[in-house]
Amino acid sequence: MGKITLGNIIKRIWGDNCSAYDLLNEPNLSIIHEIMPTNTSEVKHYHKDRNQFFYCLEGVLTVEVDDKIHILGQYEGIYIKAQSPHVIKNQNNIPVEFLAISDNNSKDKIVL
Image 1 (tube, one colour):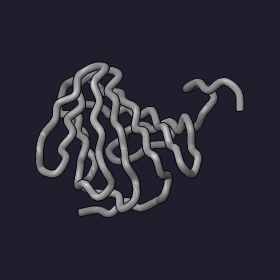
Image 2 (tube, rainbow, N blue to C red):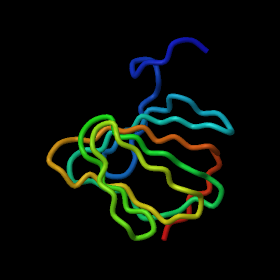
Image 3 (cartoon, rainbow, N blue to C red):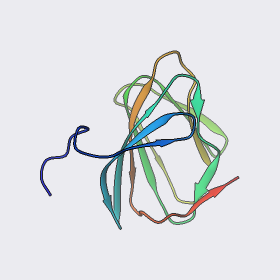
Image 4 (cartoon, rainbow, N blue to C red):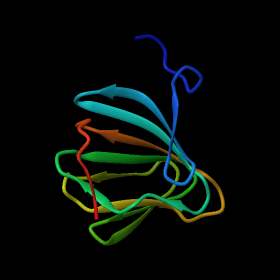
């Protein structure tokens, strides 16, 4: 496989000009480095079979899980179990960078 850097992987754009870099994309493990510009958000959703862990690298990430708000600063993370409704947001005036790690790479996103 070789060394992985942001310079040798494909950048995807999602949502409102957010960036995603697939660091690892295997059936049972997905690791994505994501960057959200200021005042952006994804849609509220859940995953039927996918557990996720979000780990903030820079900035402040707002994570709503089961209608409870969690504020993640640098080097803080949160585990989200499958079937838990959630949404991630950058409600600040600087970009936020984080890792999204999933134990199942199925395309089971269900928008609420």
